[in-house]
Each structure stands twice: as C-alpha cells, then as structure tokens.
Amino acid sequence: MNLLEKQLSSERVYQGGFLSVHKDMVELPDGRQAPREYIVHPGAVAILALTPRQELVLERQFRYPAGREFIEIPAGKIDPGEAPEITARRELLEETGYRSDKWIYLGTAHPCIGYSNEKISYYLAQDLALSERQLDEGEFLEVLTRPLDAAMEMVLTGEICDSKSIVGLHWLAAYLSGRMRGVPI
Image (cartoon, rainbow, N blue to C red; front, side):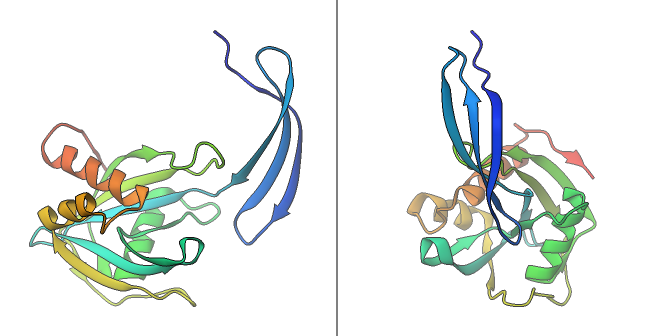
C-alpha cells in the first residue's frame, strides 16, 4: 500500500527566530489534494547526565507555552552547522555547569510527528566534572540531582511529565540494563 503524500506547493507563512511555519498542499495516495501545516525545527539534543554517585542531573524551569514549571533532563536546540554531539556537550555545560569526557549516543526520537519535523538526539554523559554554568541571556533554571531510581519514580508520579524526559529515562534504563546498545562518541 502506497502511503506517500506528494508535495504540490509549499508556502512559509511565518519565520521566527529559529522556527518557521509552513502550509503545503499535497496529493494524497488516492489522488485527492489536502493541506498540511507544520513547524520546521532545527533539531535538538537531550542529555541523560549521571554524576559519579549515579545521580541524574535534572533542571527545573518555566515553560511559557504550557504556562508552568517542569522538571526535565537538560536539552537544547542545535545551532546551524553544529553537529548534535557538539550541541550536547555545549548545552550540558551551559545549563548545568557539568562537563563529561564519556559520552554515549542512545538514539533519536521524533516528538511531534503530527505538526513538526523536530527530532531529538539523546546522549548519556557519565563521569561528570562540575565547572561553571554559562546560561544564555534570558535563560533561568534550577539544577537538581536525584538518585536514578527517584528520577524514574518521578515519571510514575507525574513530577516528570514532558515526553523528551520520559523517552530519555526509558532509554537510559534500557541501556543500563543491557537491553539497548549505545554508540560511544
């Protein structure tokens, strides 16, 4: 069965600082036409950072679109021309002050497939060393550490409820148990 939709036209209806909104017209597999609206995103990384005491580094920050604070794993958008593993190293240092020389690529997920092309690459950072945070202008967040078991429990109680962090913690548990392979970088 052919499920491919063929782009007939494309219009950028909004260009922001790093996101753009597009409205396309497509031909469906049955030959009819339909509109498609979506957000173009530069991509992002998410970091599962474990301290030498096997505590997970978390952040508490206000997320304006949802109108509330969230506890989540460190993450950030990929800058133009930047490799995801470089973004991961940069974001971990900027947001938390931690550095790592031991990195594992865990995988890539697509969090918003119905309305965005965003993809998030997940990395495990181990053997962390604390340095100085370098927050971006206008960035406010609190760095927390929690034992890994406590962080996993925070998902079950709803204290950690963003999909990026839930996926990351699931993959981290699979990696640590040997059910998932990672790629050293």
